[in-house]
Length: 367
Image 1 (cartoon, rainbow, N blue to C red):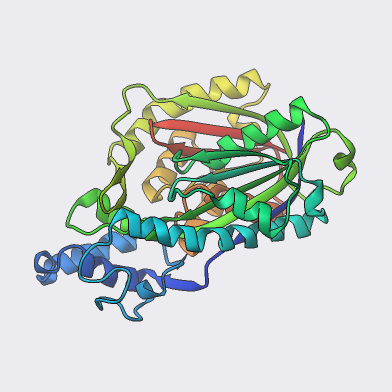
Image 2 (image 1 turned 45 degrees about the vertical axis):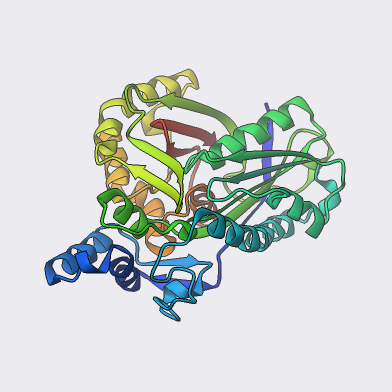
């Protein structure tokens, strides 16, 4: 298969939330009567500091402190239902996705009518007609563009989308694929004093990212994006006996993330043997990888990857810096890291890695 990246764009919503303010929001939604004690408030603040997140962008201005806690705000005294959250997703996701897509097309210097395939990725919202048709209309794309949507796969879904794009370009040298991942994690802020929900509230953020890629046909003559631009291979690994370690469920008040504290231990026990074997199949070793794009599911996950693979901490710093500056945006996050690596002139080959419900590991090689 052949895939060359010609443009990569990212987009963030306008509202910013500092982590100290996020801790204040957490105190309000984690059942006020239970966090009224100074010790529990300090615990929330400590948990937020330990995430490694300093700032994030969100679509809801309410969470920045304006109107917070008022009955008319989205997250008021009671938790909004899933239907209300999905209606807000339908309003906010398409324009954010469009912003990322236009940035990717501009970098690629490619007119929308050149696109033959559209791959959209999201796990934080469902509505139909969806983001894909909104992009078709707004750009606009040709009515004959083939659309594929990857939904509810979680943080590793951009790598699944990249694999789908590579399948299209490998099967059809004339193909030119637009891939867009958009997530509005802030819409799923959870009420209640439960450890996994509090950690998820402290980590997740909103964002969108897109790329334009082609196969070996006429579009290949386009100037490729600088830096990491050629997809080489991808791989998947389902960690044994890990089905309960990471989950993503639709409930009455939004989508609920389950993140077991055992995830870092599972990574430490299983990642290296599988990854070394997979790299050997591509005539590579851990030492031959020039840069790493590891999805920052959280600081402990990054530390587990770094320690079990014995990586120089500097190799994980791009992932830590995106987590610090943007939070965990779920599926777009990995493309934000790739953009940062590309802009810094990081050497290839690059090993992109992310984890999702299962517990599943997805990887991709780029150079």
